[in-house]
Image (tube, rainbow, N blue to C red; front, top):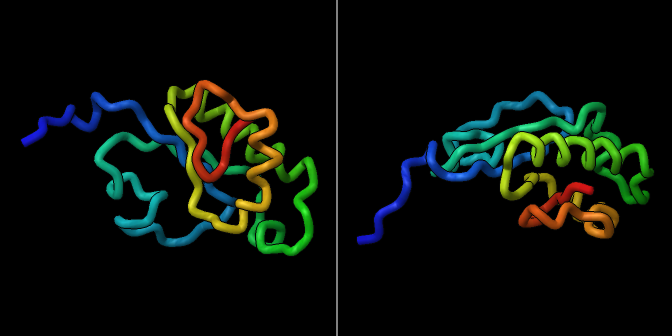
Length: 111
């Protein structure tokens, strides 16, 4: 059987959340109990559901909030960045254009 490092010895994953206060039980990607490794969380301050759930293209100020959160995660040592909001796929191309190459890019990448 394979041996794995202790969870605290593993590199952390970064999670960017929108500005939303909901219950996040184990199994939800935002809950650190979901993962067998450390999770670092950052909120894209000011990113309300009404801005995220839209058929319009996101403006640069909205994208910048996620980029800033991604940069904070990178500075805190995360090795990858994810989110659980599928609507943010519309912003992925904007973020990937200037992505942080040191990170494994997930659902949302940082500039």
